[in-house]
Each structure stands twice: as C-alpha cells, then as structure tokens.
Image 1 (cartoon, rainbow, N blue to C red):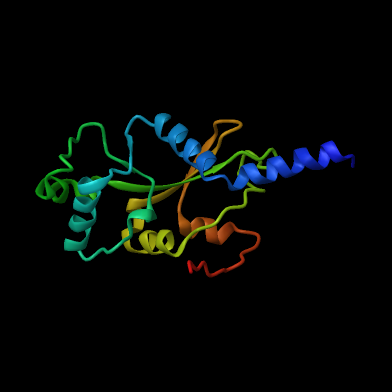
Image 2 (image 1 turned 90 degrees about the vertical axis):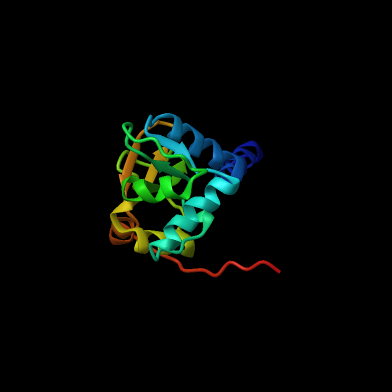
Length: 164
C-alpha cells in the first residue's frame, strides 16, 4: 500500500466518526419521509418529555432523532395537552446512517453504537420506538427495532463512556 492509499483510508475512517456527517444523514433521512419531523428543540422538546413522564415513561432528549406523526394529525408542541392527546400516535425514531461502501443492502457490515439512552427509550416506548438504518450512498432505508438489531447482530462490544 502506498502512502496516498493509507491517507485515503484514514480519511474514510475519520469520516465515519464525524458528528457533522451523522447529522447530515439524519437530515437526509428525515427529508425523505414526509411524516417525520426533526426532534423538537427547547421548550417543545421539554413538553414532549414531560408528557411522556406523565404516562410513566422517562427518556432522555438524546434517545431519539426524529418523530413520525400521521399526516392527518396536527400537534401543538407548545401545548402539553395537545401532545398528551396524540402521544399514542407518535413514533420516536433513532436514525443510524452509514456511508461506508462495505454496507450491504440488508445493512450487513454496518457498525454503529446504541447508547444506554436509546436502548432504554426502546424498552419503554415499545412499538412506538423505531430505528431507521439509512445508507447515504444508496439512499436505502430500513426501519427496524433495537430488539431486532440485537437479535441479528454478529458481534457486540459493550462499553462505558465517561466524561471527566
């Protein structure tokens, strides 16, 4: 392998870990689904989390990237009562995007992490939580669940992330 090939491989490797690149994948996948909206911010996000709390579900703001709402429903995220009325109709979506050529159409070869917050949200929300696997190279998307991902994974490595 010549030095230029090594540099190109390193660039591709670093690209995988770039947060900006992941956010781009989230944006692309949300844009591809007309009933999805990005995770609300600020007070609207606090209202969603509060509404969930009132039903006994406590999740972190980082446990989903988007929400899916049927097109015939209009929710006022500034009004907790409106959120409560339609909470059963909301699907919380975690987006995992891939940009590696090794990722196959069935997403085999895709390496990513599931955080404790994402796993907890999936357990608490049940069928109202989905994981969107999005291939940015092919624009292919597969909707799945944390349970299905764990069941089909070829290997798992558990880790602890710390901030000092």
